[in-house]
Length: 469
Image (cartoon, rainbow, N blue to C red; front, side, top):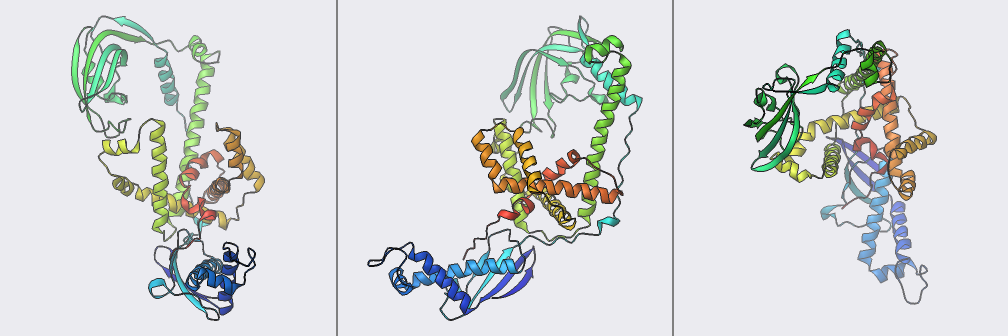
């Protein structure tokens, strides 16, 4: 066999393949062995008819067509393997003018294949890159803010006869309509008037507090609330809600004293000082986790930004497909649909795909970079480590024993978990390198390891080599 490789843009390659007469004969013989088991020929036992008889039985044209397909499949796989290429899409095959050329016994056979392959990753010398971890500090004001939040959540309510003011809780009968459809209809709803102007936004009904300040029992107020673009319910975002509220009662919050009794009522601690120290430790731990996650992101981005990859569009499109399927599943769990979301946001699926393209390309690139780092660092995952990770995942799942057995033996599942572990360890090694020895927890790598679970890595071992033509 002779193979000539031409590199094309977007990580595509063109292969010119020439099979020798001996290799063509091999394809003819394999085709005969396959057909002789499938056809029934009078006077011969199944599988025993000579090749010439089989050819006459199925017809010379059909036999050569099957033999040509076999030659292309065999030659394509051998060419890909010999050139150390990893196809990531179905190949386009050209066997000659009008794609009607057939193999002939005793003659060489030529065909061309064009296919997208896993791209080359030109990593920088990341041992020269330096990234600093953010220092974690917790001030007395930080602790006091948390204590004040706990104090407010444990306040008692005391009825008042004055007009409602910021900090009060108003009992209301409320209705809300959007585009003529009733969205809210609640009686005796308790609504806290938050200080929205000073950093206490109301995520439920932004702007309602301003409309209810000064209201008294028995009073009715109507307002048009402009819901923000980032509203918690995507379907209602950027719309106007017509609200009607009847005030029934106003209560003021009575805050508890910050003392040992308070500590005992809200925690397992005996003293207020113990509670305060524990809260400081919790805040510090949360900020360390946040700092670790930021360090991971900074390290990965520092290398990714310095890496050139000619990313094939098929990987980006597959990543968009994956993201849209995740969205669809999320909406279905909420008893909604992707179609409803698109209608509410006045977008088509094409618009959605266009909006996702940049982030999808970033995810694919980071996945390829982490895979290349894992290769460069000779990071491997043993079967024992893979089995342990799979069992950890199964413990958090509610599924049948039969499904668990299927998952344990699924090559796709095992490939996904193996590549995820490789990405996590690549991140840990990268952080250690760019920080001069800093260690990072496995947990800090999880978010980006999941985000970069792109087709570029997780389908590497399961891509089809079936060809068209």
